[in-house]
Length: 355
Image: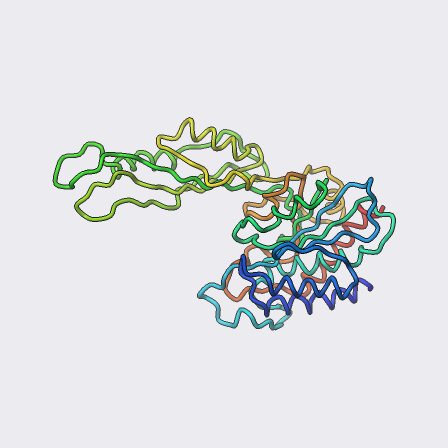
């Protein structure tokens, strides 16, 4: 099929995806729609849980692997919606619906370009397309669970809404559970070891602490206390105060580095929930980046987390749509953004994969 024909199919598929609820861990029905796409185009594919993947037809065992990825799960619609989130409608060039911008437009654009590339001989890269689940909740059965089935990618393009600019770095995430311990007792009696009062100093420490290494793309590591929990009733001094600390990590630190530093210096006990969602980047002189720059696209660093976090190879985040619309009420993407995105993806890959 021509790229123009695939553009029409991509918009139709996105409408179907919008009309099919696919909350994280509940994506089986959108996975079935994606199966139909591959079957209709005669492309063999694999499926595990709600993840699907397929390789280009003419795989060269000596060629490096380029991973194309975007996700088909969504968050739940927020209470601000004024229209049915599962009814796709086009008004004023905008395609409305839950998941249209994050990341349905990216997914169907990448699928269209992968399908266009599928039968081409003599590619310099093998290409694998992964439509992944559980991105929105960083779940265990998402892209990370597929990687064990694939050769190690040399590079990846992750489809997320970036206005088709080049996010060449992305912050990682570590969530910590912190605990301030004290001496429990009756509120009527003296107690010089009340953990709630001790909490004041600890909160000040977290507020004022700064990490040394800053990034021209991603800025400073950002650490924020987001939850505080203590006490069960008015007349009991609790034994502890629990905090949750959100840390957004630039590319100069691994998540293990952050944990080691905070474990040594924080004035309370601190435990990471996971260290796997690391920061990611791609060299500014990588052929994919240079190809994008030649087309007038801009580079930047992204503060938001994506499936890049589970990849160990250089990765570029790029896709149609605008990140500021993600998770918003009455989510939408412009149809022209998707059509332009398909053209830009195709030209980008032509330069890198074909020439």
